[in-house]
Image (cartoon, rainbow, N blue to C red; front, side):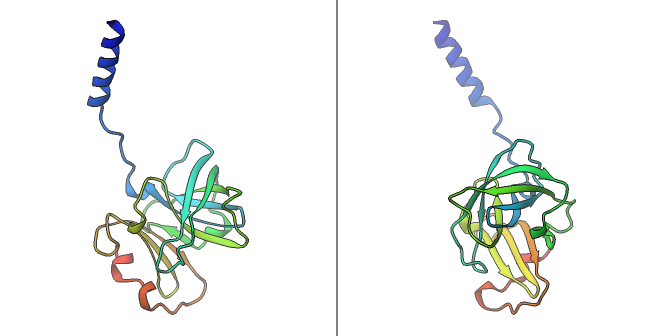
Length: 177
C-alpha cells in the first residue's frame, strides 16, 4: 500500500510541476561553419556540458537544402573560428559565444560548409535563408517565413557583391529590426 501511495504522490507532483522553461529564441539558434569535419558554432546559448549533439541545416531557398549535418559541440572557444569571422548572430544583441564543433563520421564532407543550428525542436518550414547584396541572412520564424513573427536572425557576410533576385532574394522582413 505504501508503494502505491508513493507512486500516486510522485505522479501528482509531476503533473503539478511547472513545465520546463523554454530558452529565449536568441538562445535556440546559431550559425555554424567549418571545413571537412571541424568547425565552430556561434550562438547566444551558454553551453556547459560537452559533448552536445547538434544538427546543422541549410534552409532554402538560398541554399540547396542539402541533408542536415550532424555533429557534436566539443568545447568553448575564446573567439569565433575563421569560418565565422564575418558572421553575426542577431545584430544589436550582446556578443555571441563560440564553440568548437566536430562533425560525425557519417556526416562530414569534403570542403567548406555552413548553415544554421537549431538547438530546440523546430519545424523545418520555419527556417529561411535568403541573399542580400553582400551576404546570406538566415532566419527562424514562429510559423511560415515572412508571414509570422521572426524569432531569430543571423548573417554571413561575403567580401564581394551578390546579385540577389528571384526566390532567394531577401525581403525587408528578413532583416528589419
